[in-house]
Image (cartoon, rainbow, N blue to C red; front, side, top):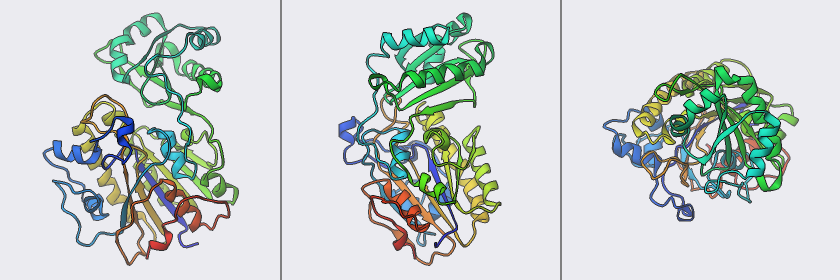
Amino acid sequence: MRYQRIITIVIDSLGVGSAPDAIAYHDEGSDTLGHIDAVVSSLHIPNLTRLGLANLHPLTHCKASREPLGYYTKLLETSKGKDTISGHWEMMGLPVTEPFLTFTDSGFPNELLKALTERCGCAFIGNKASSGTAVLKELGERALSENSVIIYTSADSVLQLAAHEESFGLTRLYRCCEIARELTLKEEWRVGRVIARPFIGNNQDDFMRTANRHDYALKPYGRTVLNELKDNGFDVIGIGKIADIFANEGITESYRSQSSVIGMKQTIDMLKQDFNGLCFVNLVDFDALWGHRRDPIGYAQELERFDSSLGELFNELRADDLLMITADHGNDPTFLGSDHTREAVPLLIYGKDMLGHGLLPVQDSFVCVGHTIADNFQLSGAHSGQSLLRFLR
């Protein structure tokens, strides 16, 4: 075992240019990082630049580093889809070969709505594809006055339930989501995630989603690197929505994050403790607050906040720590629509014991992340893809 602790941070939705198969998803020309850089007047991310991000993806506001701290490359997704689950599962060795069901064009079937209404004892309104902020403006006041639940989806395989956190009740909303998850295990309704979307406020001008979101994901269809780590006595610490994404499979400790800033603080605090294994972090605000809302300025500011925290994280790294920073898909805030974009994602790798640095070959799967972790901890399970450990000098 070369590294005692591996820290894998997912900047949720930080794509670095259209994937070769982007045309199949109508995403040709998307470029989350590049288009943010082109739109903003400045982008101050010195720590990401030191890690080689501007070497990997030329940026107007950041110069490529002459002596990057570590290694960098791009990853291409093999899974069918461009959602959170497929990206994360593939990272941990489990590509999604059959895309999850979507109900973007038609909404959810009447039979499902009827079953939800009967089981939950409340009315469901909406049943359409929409962004979360738009659907609150359109239907939030009605949901509040009727004490009903807004049901909506997107281009991704999700069933989202929004209800007023105070009047409808958080516990009641979670129970509705549990029922929806149970119902959507049925083959013809099987979505990747059911998501609770509680909100507060009194009218369409001040409705705001709260941090009490909760994802109810399908269980992985097979074993992941997380399972093998846990079964072999290693720590698997999930920060953010990692435990939700993997339905708690293979997780030994889990910490929810109210924001990406708090998620980084939790990660930094975790590095001050002793553990042996993986700290796996998802920072969702990039995607939820800025990508889906098509706000490149907000996205850039979130990157700058992350970069500042990254400087603090560097100070807590030990000689036997390995840091890997990547993403699960793109979400170009300048692109059409309001959904994820099929893009390559970055992989930045750094360890204090590294003597070398530079560009690694482009990887044709996200699996290399999990395979590198498995290789380091000498796990015996079979892992497709390539471990990058041998490149790290």
